[in-house]
Length: 325
Ligand SMILES: *Cc1c(COP(=O)(O)O)cnc(C)c1O
Image 1 (cartoon, rainbow, N blue to C red):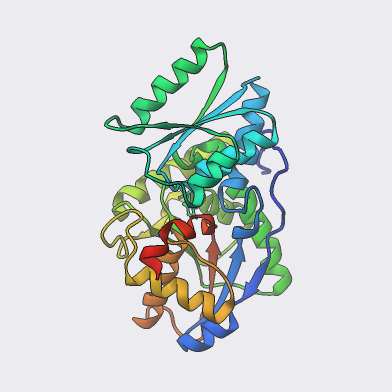
Image 2 (image 1 turned 135 degrees about the horizontal axis):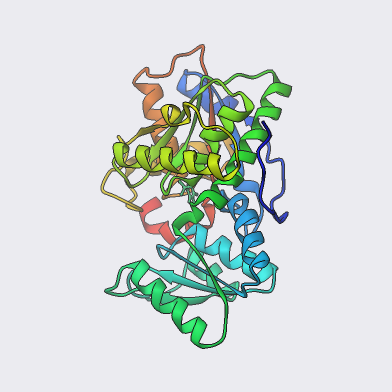
């Protein structure tokens, strides 16, 4: 039963490499750690949103939309990548960002501006409320906006990660590698939904574990399972048991979204200094911090193999210089 994929643009540099993290594995005295480099997808640096936007922007253009509109935090990677995709296809881009403008633009916010996106601050409103206003203003100006949900996490966006899992399954079989765990940062759920469904479709046995960035595990699990099931329906494939494979760990929420603690700082520094690989302060730093902690607690043993899926975000690093140094 082959999935019926919707229209897709080719923006990402694929396949992204799978590499062994030899020095980190040795340092931790734990399982063999591999890394899937979706920080290298391209599109104004890179990250997991590139794969989602290949499908989202294709749909926007198929519907003759001329503006991409989306939402996020001030350091949203998804917003930066949406701005880049809009620029690349000659579309307008309106970003709805939480809160009020900071005194200076760093990290992703600087890139949003360089990429030509319009910035709309939500202030006291919620982002969805502000998004409704922005969409209707664009319509009044005669545009046809294409609204993209938080993180690009709907059935269209998640499809990008179904294909990513197909790509990874091919790489793993070439490397004759069967990871016991696939671990990554999970937040709006589209990445995990796609990976879980892809694992089901393309036969990947290992345990798939999302490290929650900002939601209680039970909430995120329900959200991811629902999205994985809806994506299966959208692609016209069966989704038997897919919901059962959705596992989320919420032990590393710390003080909340984008609040950097020792966990992220130590993981970022260790990975940088042992592997020359940059993680980000909000997502991959937290997920790698979680992975390292799980290894230290003995949840993953020496003879196991684990694949860490790098989802990008390094463009935010400079905005967190105080917290990271
Ligand atoms: C958006 C994002 C995630 C989370 O992906 P979801 O599909 O929203 O769960 C993880 N890492 C980085 C760097 C991101 O930008």
